[in-house]
Length: 217
Image (cartoon, rainbow, N blue to C red):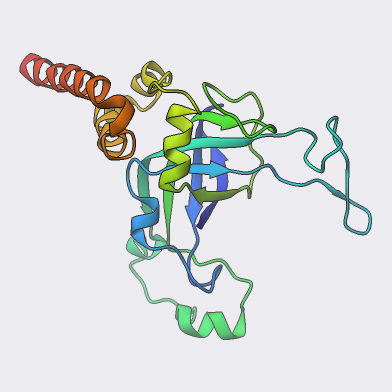
């Protein structure tokens, strides 16, 4: 499901997206679709020239051989300019704004932090690591299905792969350990047939790290 669009980045692997609201989508996403630890995909943006013609890329397609990027939602922030405004406002409520100015952007909204952890290449194979392309502003953010999440971690093999483990610990900062525990909760259900022992070991390791970290505070 399409849940939002990229609006900015904090680094090459740390992006910020805005969740679609009622002014931008007839059927906006539910909170279940952009919760903490949700895997998302960002498909490549087509480049159009002239009368809608798509420029062919090196592989003869319309995306220049671009790949679909994979990320994890690791943070969220509410945007509400009204909270800091003490005086009366002259603007109309959102319900009337939708009728008289349908192209206006709602000032209130939800921002989500997305950490990039891999991609799907043009052959359909899933890869874990840091994607090389830079994501353009307004790129669509789509929630991944359970089948896609499983494929991203197993990729046709018989063993579980979480090569982005140290990457998350470094770039998700204070959310790193809890984010990985959330991922393990998902993989325990989706990949139990190939990963029960690996998931159990990683969970024990993370829990011990959290315990010792709390004791040192």
